[in-house]
Amino acid sequence: MSERELRPWRVISSTYPIASAHLRLRADRVELPTGEIIDDYYVRESRGFCVVFAMTEDERVVLVRQYKHGIREIIIELPAGGIDADETPEACAHRELAEETGYTVERLEHLRTFPVDPTSASGSFHLFLGRGARLTTEQSLDVTEEIDVSTVPLNEIRQMAFDGRIRPSSQVAAILVALEALKG
Image (tube, rainbow, N blue to C red; front, side, top):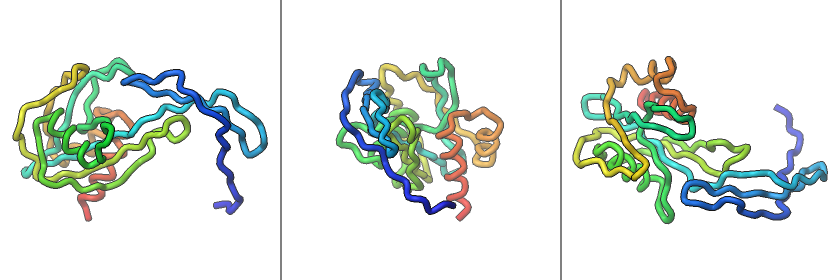
């Protein structure tokens, strides 16, 4: 790998053309290391989100199936959700697992933090592993959520990530990292 010095862009100014509960879009005026000015470089801001690889005592992985409006499709994924203001990623992971699925775990292990889309977004997702998940409560869904919960055998989840039954890139990465963590 080259050892050439790389320099960050200089932010000249920022505005927020959109700042709603569902989207915060920042427009930066930036100066590139070459001196060139870009007047409208857009960045989607967020506090990030958490993904939970929750596994029951009998080694079944908790999954959710729900509609995602951005792609206008129903998809299968691990429980996940956005971090609220003044909430830690771990607290978010516990909350989202319980709200979306009714499953809870005593302890979560933080496996890794991934930048989501570092070219045009500020958020990251935090992956947590939870063992011994138990169904202990009712779902508590947001107004935009309708979620079907299921579990699959641990030995099937890898294939689901590779054959396209689980499609979002963040979810596939989360599954592969979690499976590797379970090996060690």
